[in-house]
Length: 138
Image (cartoon, rainbow, N blue to C red; front, side, top):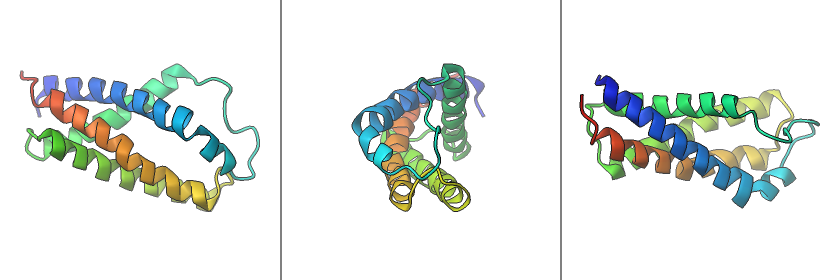
């Protein structure tokens, strides 16, 4: 695996995923998810812990980049979008339903909607990673 492509894809992916996540969950669907919280109280933070958000988005970007580069390296932007969408859907379908089954963080509607929105979020991130990882060379 080419280290420069991996680092480039990870960093660009993290930036795009953070920005996309902000637009989707904090702007466009904030009221929807506020209305579909579970009975747990005190869960949302007043302000995000930025370093923790950075680590999470870097890990997500690294996961998609690692899968992409491990599948032969060069992926088209459309292929990257599909790979990111599928990875995001499966990852968050697992997380949301495990959390739904074990906690009171969201109701069933929220647990279903979150991974469906992740198709768009992960798809855009995967497309960005494919666009830059395909151009970076060692």
